[in-house]
Image (tube, rainbow, N blue to C red; front, side, top):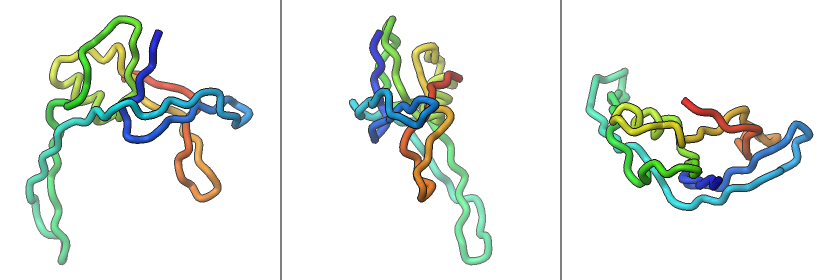
Length: 110
């Protein structure tokens, strides 16, 4: 079994004692294409409607290989007919004292 991180940053996995038990460095980037169109004005601010399209940088399904991606990328893959059985999302996020995400405790699936 292999886990490949296709997010732009390393992912630390913490145990229940807040100890890092694994780190997955970024090995590429998978993203859903994004298109934004003007919707309306909100006072002096522009509001856009964003639609996500087909994922880019997402390899084809390969048995025993799991890919860590963003939820938007996984949802786009599903919308475009790709299996999501191999796509992992981060879950149960761990934050530092400043509230910044520094890892997670587990993976999730759609």
